[in-house]
Length: 538
Image (cartoon, rainbow, N blue to C red; front, side, top):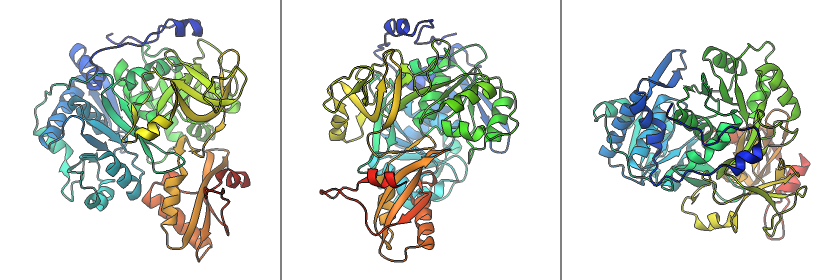
C-alpha cells in the first residue's frame, strides 16, 4: 500500500478538521501520482476496467497505462505540443481519455475536457477561447470538429481513437510509433493542469483553470464522503461524464490515486436498470450518483441487490425521501456534498462520523473553511442567511478564470471566494443551501448558464429577443424554459425549430424543454432582463 489517505479517520469531525494540514510538496505532477508511482511499486495492479458499449470487458494495469500514456505523450510532442499548450479532450469514459490526461500532464500541457453532447457552437467557443492546439476525439464526434476546424486557426492536429477522416491522425497508430518512456515535466502544485468551463449568468462560459494541486484538494472530501476511502475491496464508478468535475475529480482521479479499480463506462443516455446491473456485475463498491440519476433509479420496480459501501451525491438538493430510499435499496446512507467548478467538495457528509441532517449539504470538510457572507463581505453569525463563501487556502480552489483576471478578481471578497449560492449555517456547522443568488439553472446536476442559450436562440431569423430560466421539475430539479419574442411565425413549428437549434448547436442537455412566446420581456431601467420575474411565472 503506497497511497495514504490525507484525512486520518476519526470519530469526531471537529478533531479531524483541527488535526488536518495540507501537504506542501515542492514538486507535484498528476501523471506521477495517478500512474507512475503505482507502475513502479505494483506494476500489475489493476487500474482500470473498461466496459465497452458492446459488452466486452477489458482490464488495464498501471504499467500498461504508464507505457501507453508515455507513448502518446511522445506522439503529442512529436506533433509540436509543448509545456503550457492546451490539448482538448472530446471523449466519453474510455481508456483513451485516461491516457490523454496522463500524456498531457507528463508534458506539462493543459487538458481541456469537453462534453461529448456539445454541438458546434459550444465546441467552437471553448476550443477558440482555450486556444487548444490539439484535440483527441472519436468517430462519433469527429464530424462536429471537422465542421468547425477552419474557424479554429490554433488547432493544429486532431487525433481520433477509431474512425479517421478529414486529416485526423489515428490515436493508436501515432501511439504505436512512439517510445514507451517519457520524462515527467517538473511541475509544481500550482502549475496549470486543466481548464473546466463553467457557465455564468452574463457573457459566455468561463474557463476555470486548475493546477496539479486540484487532486490533493479533492481528496479530503472524496475520502470522507466515501467513508474513508480506500478500503479493501473498493471499486469506483460514476455515470457522470469525466468532462465534468464530478466525474473527473470526484471519481476518476481519486480512484487512480488511491489504487482503487476504476470502472469506465459511459451510457449514451442514462438507463437506471443498466446502472443497477453494471454496479452488480462489475462489483462496484463506491459510486457518485447525482440526485437526478437516483430519482430515475428509484423508478426501477425490482432493483437487484448491490454490495455498495459508499454513495456520494451532489450537484443539487438530495431531499429526505431520496435519502430514505437510498438506505432501503442501496444499503447505505447517501453522503451529500457541495461545491462548484471553481472550488469543489468544500462541504460534505460522512455518516460513519456524524449523522446527516435533513436538508443539509453537510459540514466543512477538513482543509476547507466555509462561511456565510453578507453583501458587504462580512461573515454572518449562525442562523443568518447570506452567500456561501470559501476561504483562500483550500487546494481545490481554481487558479483563476482563463485569460479573465477581472472576472477572477470579482469572484472574491478579500480572502473569500463567493459561490453565488445563498444559504445558512446552523450553530453546529451544518450548511443549508437555499437558492441561487444568480440565474444559473441546475438541471440533472448540470449548471447551465442562460446567456449561451439566449445567444443561440436570438441567432434565429424569426427571433427578436429571448430569455432563459429554470422552472421546477420533480426529476431534474429544474428544466430549461425559454421566453421568446418572435418577429414572425410564433407557434409550435418555431418552438420545435428553436429547441432543435439549441440541441444541435450547443448541446441537448441545455436545450429548452418548453418555449413560451411573449410580446415583451420584463427589463430593468438599464436594459437587463429581469429573469427572476420570468422565473416567478413558472
